Length: 155
Image 1 (cartoon, rainbow, N blue to C red):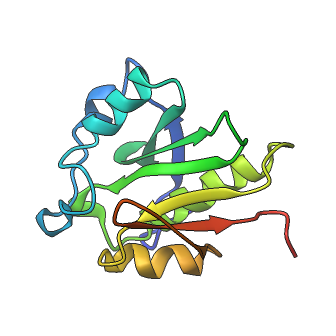
Image 2: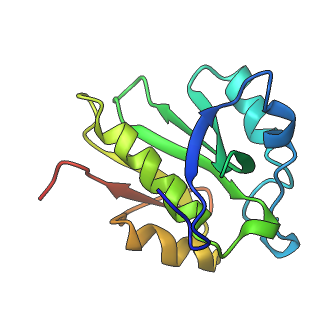
């Protein structure tokens, strides 16, 4: 998968070699109402809560983002969270490429029937990105964020 600049986008588990770079990923200042100030919060959630799995987003081998995924043990639904592209790399198509990679990985799991995520409707980038990838609103809300779903094997 490539971003708009032609860089190869890959996903990598957060490990002893890249955790500092992943933890330092930060959004633009105007996005802090919708995501954490640093990806470190999401990395810690992955370490402390057994549900989440953090991944670093790399462009040509350099860490430029974070995302995490998890599987709800009660109903088997897969979730995506902690999607963050470093402020300096936003608009380059890194987030879209990373999400496409993750969606492909999750859809390959035989038990993956649906993938969900939440986002605040005032997050304009998310409001454009997720529907373009096939996510549709469920009508459900978690706090002030709408829940959207993708069923990878429909149609």
